[in-house]
Length: 349
Image (cartoon, rainbow, N blue to C red; front, side, top):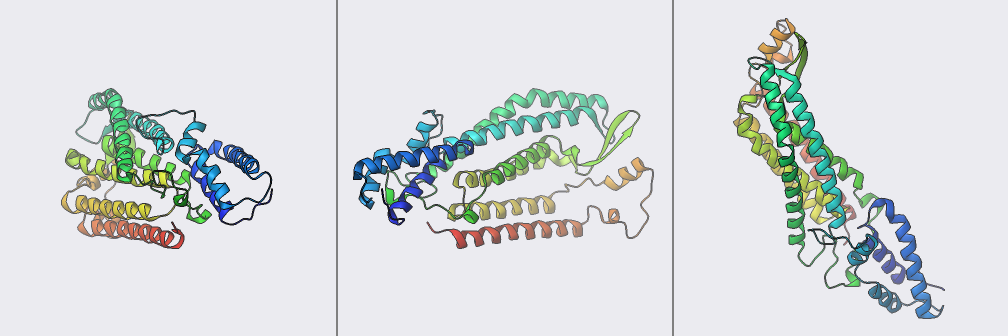
């Protein structure tokens, strides 16, 4: 069978890409080869071994059906609350979120149980707080499940009758997504790592902020001089949770789309700006740093800070806060510029 590598081959490659992108990575190569062989056999049977025309390819692909439905058949036809187009990234994200949330809560409970916060806390209080966190784990896991489902439901609702990558419903071969260049793709591992880091950081920041500090041993107890102002943490934890949700949304969109394009750019830039705004608001409106950190550290280390060049002398000053905001703003700007560059350079749908 002879087939020119033109519109016909491009159409087949786009169809294959749209099917296998919805499957677990461990299955993609095998299913791609199997599906390619199936398409070749169907074309050979239709053309009787002759030249393959574009109409022949379209007829065969239409017989195979929507890529999302075909991918679901390869996965055994399993369905959950989320539609088949988002089932695989939803299930993957759900597993990561539940595992990281459980792991983060265990760390937070362990830290609260074993660590004594520098005066006036006592070990018994730490044990009580740790046990309370253990009891809260099922509820937090349920909340994590709900938020992941809500985020995916919102994305699917926004999609409406249009897939994030351009596949419309009803099935239209002309709207199959183009196979992106290698540099245009966002590695799944990058999104997975981003989700893991965001969740563990968020869980610890919300439930065990005392983990960030100077640790030392005193009278056979592990004591920590907290870097953060724990007395106002209940007032700002909602802002931290919001920032975590925004970052999680950004990583989920990247996981679903898998390449640089307009939706990824919009989501990334929006979340970066909002997170920067939240961070700046917290630093300028709240005293988030422990105001007694230097004094407590001097007592713990039995050493007085006297050097004029010691950075601790500038602790909790407006200058330090502005410097931190500036550094975070630069990082956000670099992220936005990188996203815009890749979107303009590689987005061709």
